[in-house]
Amino acid sequence: MARLLAALLVAAALLIAAPVAGAAPASGGPLAGPPYVDHTEWAKWGDLSTLRVYPTAAGRAVSVQPDTVAQADEAWAEVLALAPDGDMPGMRAQFICHWQFAERVQPGKTSWNLEPWRPEVDDETMIATGCNPGGTQEPF
Image (cartoon, rainbow, N blue to C red; front, top):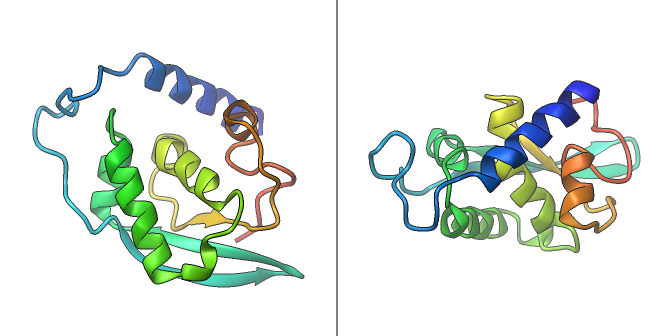
C-alpha cells in the first residue's frame, strides 16, 4: 500500500506539473478518440457491489495524457450509457481518480472498479487512498 501511495503522489505531482490547457499530448500527436470504455459489468464482493469499467486501448492511452478533462467527461458519459445505475454519489469521483492514475500506477489493470458503498471524500483523500476510500480494494 505504501508503494501505491508513493506512486499516486508522484502521479499527482506529474499532473500538477503538466502543461497548460490546450497543450499537445506528450507524444506530440493528436489524442485518440472515443470510445474510451469497452464495457462495464456489475460484480459482487460478499454483500458489496462493484462496477467494473473496462477501458479501451484509447481510454488507457488518453488517460495518461495531460489536459484530458473533456475526454474524462466523455468516458464517464460512456460509463453511464452502459450502466445508468452507476450514477451514484462518489462513483464519478472514483472514476476520475482511476482515469488520472490507474494507468500510471498499475498499467493494463483489467478493470477500473468503482464501488457505490465507498464514502464521498475530497480529492486529497481520494488520491491518498489509491482511489479506494473507506476500505481496501476488492480482491478481483
